[in-house]
Image 1 (cartoon, rainbow, N blue to C red):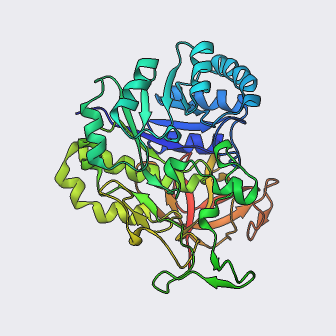
Image 2 (spheres, rainbow, N blue to C red):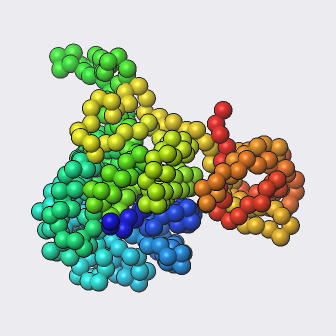
Image 3 (tube, rainbow, N blue to C red):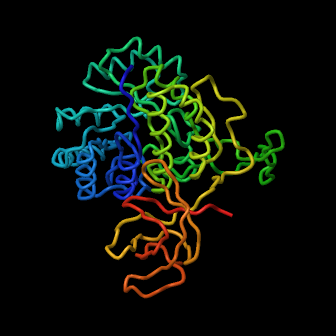
Length: 408
Protein backbone atom coordinates (compact mmCIF):
# COMPACT_ATOMS: atom_id res chain seq x y z
CA UNK A 1 0.00 0.00 0.00
CA UNK A 2 1.34 3.46 -0.93
CA UNK A 3 1.84 6.06 1.78
CA UNK A 4 -1.17 8.38 1.99
CA UNK A 5 -0.71 12.15 2.46
CA UNK A 6 -3.43 14.47 3.76
CA UNK A 7 -2.88 17.82 2.02
CA UNK A 8 -4.69 20.83 3.47
CA UNK A 9 -5.06 24.49 2.33
CA UNK A 10 -4.11 27.52 4.39
CA UNK A 11 -5.16 31.12 3.74
CA UNK A 12 -2.98 32.62 6.47
CA UNK A 13 -0.25 31.84 8.97
CA UNK A 14 -2.86 31.18 11.67
CA UNK A 15 -4.68 28.66 9.47
CA UNK A 16 -1.40 26.97 8.48
CA UNK A 17 -0.64 26.33 12.14
CA UNK A 18 -4.17 25.00 12.68
CA UNK A 19 -3.82 22.65 9.70
CA UNK A 20 -0.52 21.31 11.02
CA UNK A 21 -1.81 20.81 14.56
CA UNK A 22 -5.09 19.20 13.47
CA UNK A 23 -3.48 16.49 11.38
CA UNK A 24 -2.30 17.65 7.95
CA UNK A 25 0.75 15.90 6.52
CA UNK A 26 1.34 18.84 4.21
CA UNK A 27 -0.12 22.32 3.69
CA UNK A 28 -0.40 24.26 0.45
CA UNK A 29 -0.28 28.05 0.51
CA UNK A 30 -0.06 31.01 -1.84
CA UNK A 31 2.31 33.92 -1.90
CA UNK A 32 1.25 37.46 -2.70
CA UNK A 33 1.33 36.78 -6.45
CA UNK A 34 1.11 34.06 -9.12
CA UNK A 35 -1.39 31.82 -7.31
CA UNK A 36 -5.07 31.24 -8.13
CA UNK A 37 -6.56 32.70 -4.96
CA UNK A 38 -5.88 36.42 -5.25
CA UNK A 39 -8.72 37.21 -2.82
CA UNK A 40 -7.26 34.99 -0.09
CA UNK A 41 -5.12 36.69 2.54
CA UNK A 42 -2.06 34.82 1.25
CA UNK A 43 1.44 34.93 2.70
CA UNK A 44 4.11 37.61 2.78
CA UNK A 45 7.68 36.29 2.45
CA UNK A 46 8.13 36.69 6.20
CA UNK A 47 4.93 34.80 7.00
CA UNK A 48 5.83 32.10 4.50
CA UNK A 49 9.22 31.62 6.13
CA UNK A 50 7.67 31.41 9.60
CA UNK A 51 4.99 29.01 8.39
CA UNK A 52 7.49 26.69 6.71
CA UNK A 53 9.69 26.67 9.83
CA UNK A 54 6.65 25.86 11.99
CA UNK A 55 5.60 23.02 9.67
CA UNK A 56 9.09 21.56 9.51
CA UNK A 57 9.45 21.69 13.30
CA UNK A 58 6.31 19.54 13.43
CA UNK A 59 7.50 17.14 10.72
CA UNK A 60 5.14 18.49 8.03
CA UNK A 61 5.64 19.89 4.52
CA UNK A 62 4.59 23.12 2.79
CA UNK A 63 3.87 23.48 -0.93
CA UNK A 64 3.58 26.91 -2.60
CA UNK A 65 1.14 27.54 -5.45
CA UNK A 66 2.37 29.35 -8.55
CA UNK A 67 -0.33 27.97 -10.84
CA UNK A 68 -1.55 30.95 -12.86
CA UNK A 69 -1.68 30.73 -16.64
CA UNK A 70 0.99 33.36 -17.23
CA UNK A 71 1.14 36.15 -19.79
CA UNK A 72 4.37 37.70 -21.12
CA UNK A 73 4.28 40.49 -18.55
CA UNK A 74 4.21 37.93 -15.71
CA UNK A 75 7.43 36.15 -16.54
CA UNK A 76 10.05 38.50 -15.11
CA UNK A 77 8.06 38.69 -11.89
CA UNK A 78 7.94 34.88 -11.79
CA UNK A 79 11.73 34.74 -12.09
CA UNK A 80 12.18 37.15 -9.20
CA UNK A 81 9.59 35.34 -7.10
CA UNK A 82 11.23 31.94 -7.59
CA UNK A 83 14.59 33.36 -6.55
CA UNK A 84 12.95 34.57 -3.32
CA UNK A 85 11.36 31.15 -2.78
CA UNK A 86 14.79 29.58 -3.14
CA UNK A 87 15.83 31.49 -0.02
CA UNK A 88 12.62 30.63 1.87
CA UNK A 89 12.72 26.90 1.18
CA UNK A 90 9.25 25.37 0.60
CA UNK A 91 9.07 21.63 -0.06
CA UNK A 92 7.51 21.92 -3.52
CA UNK A 93 5.95 24.30 -6.05
CA UNK A 94 2.52 23.72 -7.61
CA UNK A 95 2.62 24.85 -11.26
CA UNK A 96 0.33 24.57 -14.29
CA UNK A 97 1.94 26.72 -17.02
CA UNK A 98 4.78 25.11 -19.06
CA UNK A 99 6.58 28.46 -19.25
CA UNK A 100 6.44 28.89 -15.48
CA UNK A 101 7.58 25.28 -15.11
CA UNK A 102 10.59 25.99 -17.35
CA UNK A 103 11.56 29.01 -15.26
CA UNK A 104 11.23 26.99 -12.07
CA UNK A 105 13.56 24.28 -13.39
CA UNK A 106 16.05 26.97 -14.41
CA UNK A 107 15.97 28.98 -11.17
CA UNK A 108 15.33 26.11 -8.72
CA UNK A 109 16.71 22.95 -10.34
CA UNK A 110 16.49 20.92 -7.12
CA UNK A 111 12.96 22.03 -6.15
CA UNK A 112 10.21 19.39 -6.24
CA UNK A 113 7.49 20.41 -8.70
CA UNK A 114 3.85 19.32 -8.68
CA UNK A 115 1.65 19.89 -11.73
CA UNK A 116 -1.62 21.64 -10.86
CA UNK A 117 -5.08 20.38 -11.80
CA UNK A 118 -5.23 23.55 -13.94
CA UNK A 119 -3.02 21.75 -16.48
CA UNK A 120 -5.93 19.38 -17.30
CA UNK A 121 -4.20 16.11 -16.47
CA UNK A 122 -6.61 13.48 -17.77
CA UNK A 123 -4.44 10.61 -19.09
CA UNK A 124 -1.31 8.64 -18.25
CA UNK A 125 0.66 9.94 -21.26
CA UNK A 126 0.28 13.46 -19.85
CA UNK A 127 1.59 12.21 -16.51
CA UNK A 128 4.59 10.57 -18.20
CA UNK A 129 5.22 13.76 -20.21
CA UNK A 130 5.54 15.81 -17.02
CA UNK A 131 7.59 13.06 -15.34
CA UNK A 132 10.14 13.11 -18.17
CA UNK A 133 10.44 16.88 -17.72
CA UNK A 134 11.19 16.44 -14.01
CA UNK A 135 7.83 16.72 -12.22
CA UNK A 136 7.49 14.58 -9.11
CA UNK A 137 3.69 14.71 -8.82
CA UNK A 138 0.65 15.48 -10.99
CA UNK A 139 -2.74 16.59 -9.64
CA UNK A 140 -5.54 14.73 -11.41
CA UNK A 141 -8.20 16.65 -13.29
CA UNK A 142 -11.51 16.88 -11.42
CA UNK A 143 -13.21 15.13 -14.35
CA UNK A 144 -11.56 11.75 -13.75
CA UNK A 145 -13.26 8.71 -12.27
CA UNK A 146 -11.50 6.47 -9.77
CA UNK A 147 -11.22 3.79 -12.48
CA UNK A 148 -9.43 6.25 -14.75
CA UNK A 149 -7.07 7.26 -11.94
CA UNK A 150 -6.35 3.61 -11.22
CA UNK A 151 -5.49 3.07 -14.90
CA UNK A 152 -3.14 6.06 -14.75
CA UNK A 153 -1.40 4.55 -11.71
CA UNK A 154 -0.89 1.28 -13.59
CA UNK A 155 0.79 3.10 -16.49
CA UNK A 156 3.13 5.60 -14.83
CA UNK A 157 6.46 5.14 -13.02
CA UNK A 158 6.23 3.71 -9.49
CA UNK A 159 7.96 6.74 -7.96
CA UNK A 160 5.59 9.25 -9.59
CA UNK A 161 2.87 10.58 -7.30
CA UNK A 162 -0.84 11.21 -7.92
CA UNK A 163 -2.68 13.92 -6.02
CA UNK A 164 -6.47 14.19 -6.15
CA UNK A 165 -9.06 16.48 -4.57
CA UNK A 166 -11.26 14.62 -2.12
CA UNK A 167 -13.16 17.43 -0.41
CA UNK A 168 -14.37 20.97 -1.11
CA UNK A 169 -15.99 23.24 -3.68
CA UNK A 170 -16.45 22.05 -7.26
CA UNK A 171 -16.02 24.37 -10.24
CA UNK A 172 -18.38 24.17 -13.20
CA UNK A 173 -15.45 24.67 -15.59
CA UNK A 174 -13.00 22.12 -16.91
CA UNK A 175 -10.50 21.53 -14.08
CA UNK A 176 -11.09 25.07 -12.92
CA UNK A 177 -10.10 26.78 -16.17
CA UNK A 178 -13.00 29.20 -16.08
CA UNK A 179 -13.60 32.02 -18.58
CA UNK A 180 -16.97 33.17 -17.22
CA UNK A 181 -15.46 35.52 -14.66
CA UNK A 182 -13.22 37.28 -17.19
CA UNK A 183 -16.08 37.61 -19.68
CA UNK A 184 -18.73 38.81 -17.25
CA UNK A 185 -16.74 40.81 -14.70
CA UNK A 186 -13.37 41.51 -16.32
CA UNK A 187 -11.60 39.45 -13.62
CA UNK A 188 -9.56 36.51 -14.85
CA UNK A 189 -10.07 33.27 -12.90
CA UNK A 190 -6.90 31.91 -14.46
CA UNK A 191 -4.96 34.76 -12.86
CA UNK A 192 -6.50 34.27 -9.41
CA UNK A 193 -9.32 36.83 -9.53
CA UNK A 194 -12.43 34.67 -9.96
CA UNK A 195 -15.76 36.32 -9.04
CA UNK A 196 -17.51 32.89 -8.88
CA UNK A 197 -20.22 33.54 -11.51
CA UNK A 198 -21.14 29.84 -11.29
CA UNK A 199 -22.86 30.72 -7.98
CA UNK A 200 -25.00 33.52 -9.50
CA UNK A 201 -28.68 33.42 -10.34
CA UNK A 202 -29.52 33.34 -14.08
CA UNK A 203 -32.42 34.17 -16.40
CA UNK A 204 -33.05 33.55 -20.10
CA UNK A 205 -33.77 36.31 -22.63
CA UNK A 206 -35.16 35.43 -26.07
CA UNK A 207 -33.31 37.18 -28.93
CA UNK A 208 -36.33 38.95 -30.44
CA UNK A 209 -37.66 40.09 -27.04
CA UNK A 210 -34.85 42.15 -25.52
CA UNK A 211 -35.49 43.14 -21.94
CA UNK A 212 -37.91 40.30 -21.26
CA UNK A 213 -36.20 38.07 -18.74
CA UNK A 214 -37.63 34.63 -18.12
CA UNK A 215 -36.49 32.69 -15.05
CA UNK A 216 -34.67 29.44 -15.65
CA UNK A 217 -36.36 26.54 -13.89
CA UNK A 218 -34.94 23.10 -13.32
CA UNK A 219 -37.86 20.94 -12.19
CA UNK A 220 -39.25 24.24 -10.83
CA UNK A 221 -36.63 24.28 -8.07
CA UNK A 222 -34.72 27.43 -8.91
CA UNK A 223 -32.32 29.30 -11.16
CA UNK A 224 -28.83 28.59 -9.82
CA UNK A 225 -28.18 26.31 -12.79
CA UNK A 226 -24.36 26.25 -12.49
CA UNK A 227 -24.10 25.87 -8.71
CA UNK A 228 -22.47 22.54 -7.81
CA UNK A 229 -22.64 20.70 -4.53
CA UNK A 230 -19.35 20.31 -2.65
CA UNK A 231 -17.17 17.24 -3.03
CA UNK A 232 -16.94 14.89 -0.03
CA UNK A 233 -15.23 11.48 -0.13
CA UNK A 234 -15.14 10.76 3.60
CA UNK A 235 -17.13 7.54 2.99
CA UNK A 236 -14.82 6.37 0.20
CA UNK A 237 -11.29 6.42 1.59
CA UNK A 238 -10.75 2.71 0.74
CA UNK A 239 -11.60 3.36 -2.93
CA UNK A 240 -9.30 6.41 -3.01
CA UNK A 241 -6.39 4.41 -1.61
CA UNK A 242 -7.06 1.42 -3.87
CA UNK A 243 -6.98 3.70 -6.91
CA UNK A 244 -3.32 4.46 -6.11
CA UNK A 245 -3.75 8.08 -5.03
CA UNK A 246 -0.80 9.33 -2.95
CA UNK A 247 -2.11 12.69 -1.76
CA UNK A 248 -5.68 13.43 -0.63
CA UNK A 249 -6.25 17.13 -1.26
CA UNK A 250 -8.72 19.39 0.54
CA UNK A 251 -9.95 22.46 -1.37
CA UNK A 252 -10.28 25.82 0.37
CA UNK A 253 -7.49 28.40 0.43
CA UNK A 254 -10.04 31.05 1.41
CA UNK A 255 -11.56 29.11 4.32
CA UNK A 256 -11.53 29.89 8.03
CA UNK A 257 -9.53 28.20 10.76
CA UNK A 258 -12.72 26.46 11.93
CA UNK A 259 -13.32 24.98 8.48
CA UNK A 260 -9.73 23.79 8.13
CA UNK A 261 -9.61 22.35 11.66
CA UNK A 262 -12.94 20.53 11.24
CA UNK A 263 -12.20 19.01 7.85
CA UNK A 264 -8.57 18.18 8.62
CA UNK A 265 -9.32 16.55 11.96
CA UNK A 266 -12.17 14.47 10.52
CA UNK A 267 -10.20 13.19 7.52
CA UNK A 268 -7.18 12.52 9.74
CA UNK A 269 -9.30 10.34 12.01
CA UNK A 270 -10.98 8.57 9.07
CA UNK A 271 -7.72 7.81 7.23
CA UNK A 272 -5.96 6.59 10.38
CA UNK A 273 -8.97 4.50 11.41
CA UNK A 274 -9.11 2.83 7.99
CA UNK A 275 -5.39 2.07 7.92
CA UNK A 276 -5.66 0.54 11.38
CA UNK A 277 -8.95 -1.38 11.04
CA UNK A 278 -11.28 -1.21 8.03
CA UNK A 279 -14.29 -2.52 9.94
CA UNK A 280 -13.79 0.10 12.65
CA UNK A 281 -13.61 2.80 9.95
CA UNK A 282 -16.88 1.56 8.42
CA UNK A 283 -18.59 1.57 11.81
CA UNK A 284 -17.74 5.26 12.27
CA UNK A 285 -18.98 6.61 8.90
CA UNK A 286 -22.00 8.32 10.47
CA UNK A 287 -19.71 9.96 13.04
CA UNK A 288 -17.36 11.30 10.33
CA UNK A 289 -20.30 12.66 8.36
CA UNK A 290 -21.71 14.34 11.44
CA UNK A 291 -18.33 15.94 12.24
CA UNK A 292 -17.61 17.08 8.67
CA UNK A 293 -21.00 18.85 8.62
CA UNK A 294 -19.92 21.11 11.50
CA UNK A 295 -18.26 23.53 9.06
CA UNK A 296 -19.80 25.45 6.17
CA UNK A 297 -20.76 23.41 3.10
CA UNK A 298 -23.19 23.34 0.16
CA UNK A 299 -24.48 19.73 0.49
CA UNK A 300 -22.23 16.96 -0.71
CA UNK A 301 -21.53 14.92 -3.83
CA UNK A 302 -18.87 12.43 -4.96
CA UNK A 303 -18.17 14.49 -8.09
CA UNK A 304 -16.84 12.49 -11.05
CA UNK A 305 -15.25 9.69 -9.04
CA UNK A 306 -18.02 7.16 -9.71
CA UNK A 307 -19.09 8.42 -13.15
CA UNK A 308 -20.36 11.62 -14.71
CA UNK A 309 -22.45 13.78 -12.34
CA UNK A 310 -26.18 14.17 -13.00
CA UNK A 311 -28.80 16.74 -12.02
CA UNK A 312 -28.56 15.61 -8.38
CA UNK A 313 -25.09 17.12 -8.05
CA UNK A 314 -26.39 20.68 -8.56
CA UNK A 315 -28.17 23.01 -6.13
CA UNK A 316 -30.81 24.96 -8.01
CA UNK A 317 -32.63 26.87 -5.28
CA UNK A 318 -29.81 28.67 -3.46
CA UNK A 319 -26.15 29.68 -3.62
CA UNK A 320 -25.66 29.89 0.15
CA UNK A 321 -23.68 27.63 2.44
CA UNK A 322 -25.16 25.47 5.17
CA UNK A 323 -23.65 26.72 8.42
CA UNK A 324 -24.14 24.73 11.61
CA UNK A 325 -21.40 26.23 13.79
CA UNK A 326 -19.88 29.70 14.26
CA UNK A 327 -16.15 30.18 14.83
CA UNK A 328 -15.41 32.13 18.02
CA UNK A 329 -11.63 31.93 18.23
CA UNK A 330 -8.66 29.77 19.12
CA UNK A 331 -6.66 29.43 22.34
CA UNK A 332 -3.52 31.48 21.68
CA UNK A 333 -2.20 31.73 25.24
CA UNK A 334 -2.63 29.74 28.44
CA UNK A 335 -2.05 32.13 31.35
CA UNK A 336 -0.58 31.27 34.74
CA UNK A 337 -3.73 32.46 36.51
CA UNK A 338 -5.91 29.94 34.66
CA UNK A 339 -7.23 32.37 32.05
CA UNK A 340 -7.13 31.74 28.31
CA UNK A 341 -6.45 34.39 25.67
CA UNK A 342 -8.09 34.32 22.25
CA UNK A 343 -8.48 36.70 19.35
CA UNK A 344 -12.27 36.80 19.15
CA UNK A 345 -13.91 36.29 15.72
CA UNK A 346 -17.65 36.34 16.45
CA UNK A 347 -19.74 37.62 19.32
CA UNK A 348 -20.37 35.57 22.45
CA UNK A 349 -20.95 36.47 26.08
CA UNK A 350 -20.11 35.60 29.65
CA UNK A 351 -22.43 32.83 30.80
CA UNK A 352 -22.68 31.21 27.35
CA UNK A 353 -22.15 27.50 26.87
CA UNK A 354 -19.80 26.87 23.96
CA UNK A 355 -18.07 23.88 22.39
CA UNK A 356 -14.33 23.24 22.31
CA UNK A 357 -12.71 21.33 19.43
CA UNK A 358 -9.57 19.54 20.56
CA UNK A 359 -6.74 18.27 18.38
CA UNK A 360 -7.18 14.70 19.65
CA UNK A 361 -10.68 14.47 18.11
CA UNK A 362 -12.72 15.11 21.24
CA UNK A 363 -15.28 17.89 21.75
CA UNK A 364 -16.01 19.53 25.11
CA UNK A 365 -18.99 21.56 26.29
CA UNK A 366 -17.73 24.40 28.49
CA UNK A 367 -19.24 27.44 30.18
CA UNK A 368 -17.76 30.92 29.82
CA UNK A 369 -17.60 31.89 33.50
CA UNK A 370 -16.08 35.34 32.96
CA UNK A 371 -14.55 37.60 30.27
CA UNK A 372 -11.90 40.30 30.46
CA UNK A 373 -10.49 42.82 27.99
CA UNK A 374 -6.76 43.39 27.41
CA UNK A 375 -6.57 45.65 30.50
CA UNK A 376 -8.22 42.85 32.52
CA UNK A 377 -11.45 44.80 32.99
CA UNK A 378 -14.50 42.51 33.31
CA UNK A 379 -16.76 42.59 30.22
CA UNK A 380 -20.13 41.01 29.50
CA UNK A 381 -19.50 40.20 25.83
CA UNK A 382 -17.06 40.71 22.96
CA UNK A 383 -18.99 42.15 20.00
CA UNK A 384 -16.03 43.43 17.97
CA UNK A 385 -14.01 40.94 15.90
CA UNK A 386 -10.22 40.69 16.28
CA UNK A 387 -10.23 41.87 19.90
CA UNK A 388 -7.93 40.08 22.35
CA UNK A 389 -10.12 38.60 25.09
CA UNK A 390 -9.25 36.69 28.25
CA UNK A 391 -11.63 33.95 29.31
CA UNK A 392 -12.31 32.04 32.49
CA UNK A 393 -13.70 28.62 31.56
CA UNK A 394 -14.88 25.64 33.59
CA UNK A 395 -12.44 23.25 31.90
CA UNK A 396 -8.71 22.88 31.24
CA UNK A 397 -7.79 23.75 27.66
CA UNK A 398 -4.64 23.73 25.51
CA UNK A 399 -3.04 25.88 22.83
CA UNK A 400 -4.78 25.52 19.44
CA UNK A 401 -8.07 24.36 20.94
CA UNK A 402 -10.84 25.96 18.88
CA UNK A 403 -13.95 27.64 20.32
CA UNK A 404 -17.19 27.33 18.39
CA UNK A 405 -20.92 27.59 19.06
CA UNK A 406 -23.81 25.76 17.42
CA UNK A 407 -26.17 27.93 15.38
CA UNK A 408 -29.75 28.23 16.64
